[in-house]
Image (tube, rainbow, N blue to C red; front, side, top):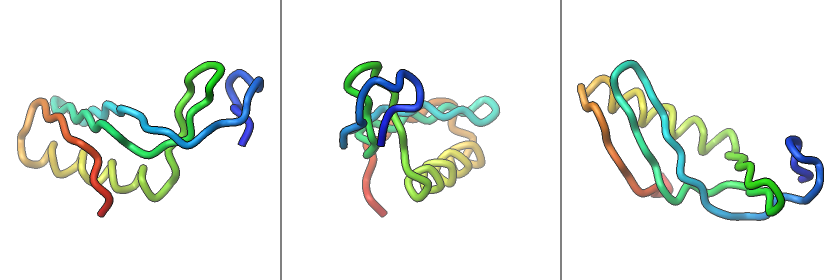
Amino acid sequence: MRCVICRQAETRAGKATLTLERGPATLVVKGVPARVCPNCGEEYVDEKVSLELLKSAEQVAKAGVQVEVREYVTA
């Protein structure tokens, strides 16, 4: 897919580090599969992965964790 931000390049398969915040909780997930623009660095995560990450962020918030760093693991 062509990057919607810079419109200069086709995105490529890669990895991203995402930071999700829910209230006082912060979840950092490394190694998330994403499409990455080689020109501007914009990262695109597909819907299935996004839903998994949002569920993880909700669990972290409910557990009362302030900051957690994880490596992405396919469910």
